[in-house]
Image: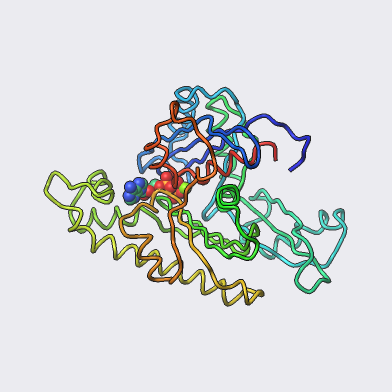
Length: 354
Ligand SMILES: Nc1ncnc2c1ncn2[C@@H]1O[C@H](COP(=O)(O)OP(=O)(O)OP(=O)(O)O)[C@@H](O)[C@H]1O
Ligand SMILES: [Mg+2]
């Protein structure tokens, strides 16, 4: 982060498939305070498979959040994840920044499963590689149409897109601030939303492995709907522990919920196995802890099941663990309830001035 970069605050805007979330912070490292928080849910047909189907609706929602929360700044940072984003660490021979900028497209072509003219490509030199003779470079490619959609809904809401990040990295930024990681601790950060699960395995403040998987809270809702003959809304509230009018009790749903938790855990397991098999650092391939963000971290029994299954402590992610807020202005129960859902938005808000 440059010291001279803008100190203007940027609103972290997480356009998720089930809710748009916004966070504005003030302060600086070690001393952040919440300025605004917004959360508006979306119907399930507004964003499908990472595509914003109803652009007008999403931009209205953004506008509404800014008005209701009385947000003054126009600058917005957002992030992407899922199919349309590729994050890869690659090893290259050491070369100058000029040489790298000439060669990067050619290199990227081998790792990115899209035509290069269809993506926005960015890269960052991470440092020397393990052998000490080459360097490690982080490649990030995002489909242009995905970025174009974000730009469009944000502009249409009268706001200006300041940067586009990746969900997993925003999650990590929120983790860094809130958990002050020890350099030798390996933590699996999960964000389980409605349609995507982001996994970022970090050692200290370094990301060693990321992966997005197309599973999430919708899987629970779908199964409850099908098996118990419910509407989407009924299944959603049953999932949250409320009985349905037709008399289905949360206890009746628990075996179905558990079966989906097992599917999610299996995906996490596969990812961690892959991570272990490909990790060059034998000592860090063991995960010490798991933190779960996203609305689906609140699924009944999920964190306990994950803890039992992986044999490590598993906690729900607290996005405001290290962020002050005025409890005259913000309702504590509301903040506590939304805390896991806001991880990406908090991480984005922290990037102000980056
Ligand atoms: N109390 C709760 N219990 C169980 N599930 C919940 C609870 N609250 C929210 N959810 C689920 O969490 C999901 C929404 O979480 P979140 O806002 O993190 O997703 P999103 O960011 O919109 O989705 P994605 O990132 O996958 O596009 C929904 O599937 C919702 O049903
Ligand atoms: Mg999300």
